[in-house]
Length: 403
Image 1 (cartoon, rainbow, N blue to C red):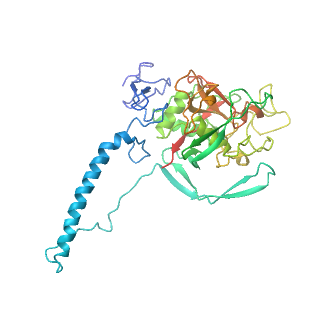
Image 2: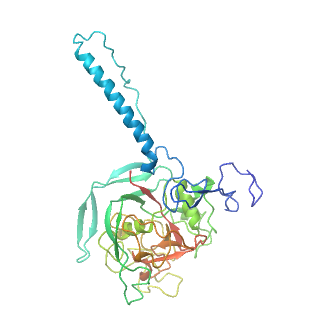
Image 3: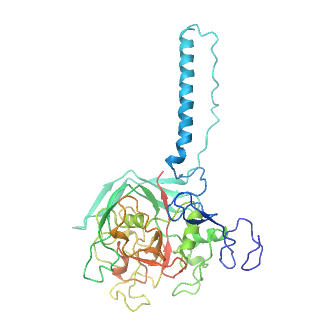
């Protein structure tokens, strides 16, 4: 097809122009579940998380109402099959000699079914090392949760089990501890899910751009590096200058999705209301990438040094891991999530699997960045950005439903 922006010919399946980064002939449609406007090429609705296209071999989005006709048909078939099976058994009992019986064919030993999972298991995790908030003494929590990798982009996943956790915090007069949108503290219950262990990297995002499924970042540089995105030296650094649309496009290309705000916060803080992903211990240069003495901002932590003037390679601070093993949940780059932003949303947030407001002008970003001091990388810190914004302090990670 011909690109309306640059006039060049691109493959018919290209969704973004590799020269300008703009969408090629977007087609809009309505999500059958929430009724909101989505693009025809999207595989999943960013508003209600429903699948918009069939996902063979993936984790499907089930609707019981849609399955009712199929369930009724299955029940009828089972009923008829059971009756026939009963007749066969009676006939067999009346024919003890076995004459007239038919031998059923068996599957050859060489024949087998091949299943292609969305996530491929790596080494199982038997222990998770964490610390108590009171003493900082190491404790070991036993778990049988395996770790996985996404087949498409090679991303490592960590498992977050279902259950309740405390989201947000109550107001605090200290502006370094409370920005205003984190209140009130409330209990949320989530289904289990997986989330990327680290933020999406330049190399990972380049593969999506090469597949014409993602728009290019707005620029090639970072704040202190002129050659960043396309420089192999920074291939394992977080991709930046990507809008919310770019983040959604990447996750859809990888056949996963952006996490909800609630999923992001639980993955970052666990169930014990910790201040940072690693606990309540004070920030230091071994725990996160934040605005330290090297940072080109006026408000910085002059006594601390994290080793980088802006972004750092993903996973550089294993001591700052969250209770589930997710890395860089504090600092490095802010992260897009799926929810619309509303400062007062927590006052009416649903108890189960909240998806955020149904509309808004901005999308939530979480986690803080290399440009924030300690107050900005708290597990509860939240703010919003317009979805078309692309910043050198902003990236993302993806999530996937638990099978």
